[in-house]
Image 1 (spheres, rainbow, N blue to C red):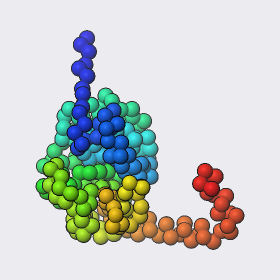
Image 2: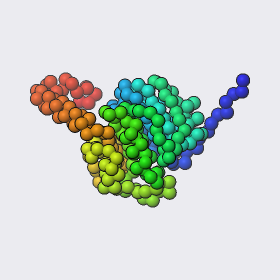
Image 3: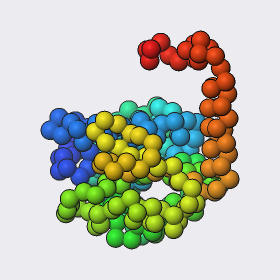
Image 4: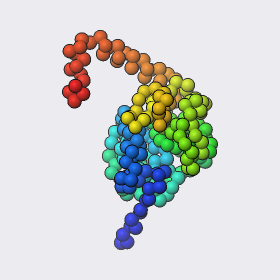
Length: 237
């Protein structure tokens, strides 16, 4: 039996290659932060990672998801992803051109980080994603903002242009976050390096989520100080 040829991926600054990220630790940290942010939306859900690259995100998401599928245009990268990651729940990979091919399944949560800025026609992808989301599903995406010229990107985005693009395909009610070197923060920050958005397929889903947040916040504020402290982990004191 022939031994499989080992696949080697080089880090070019575009695709993350985990075992090569010692040369760009900050970029590696920012990418990991985004996937960690997405974990809470993916618990026990059917998840798709669009433009999954080397599969490190699929691996992380599989630790909480029911199952995860990763799609990417590059065959070599997909083969690397299959053999160089550890998966905690069932996963599947597919080679696909997301600018031309339809996604052929339904998902509860779709993740696509650092993808839209590479596309000439991002609306095709966004409409495609909306079509294959379940009624209660959401898209979690990220886009670099106000960046200098990048030869690999088709367009430089601002808060306004991102907002217009996403609202054309999804509900106008979107949760917006800003990512900086310090972390990920709620709202639209001027000093953001990356925009992170959670876009819901249907408005009622967003409103129910918002209603639950208000209910939980109100219930928490009614508690006495001593009761509040009991439910905060000691590591945060």
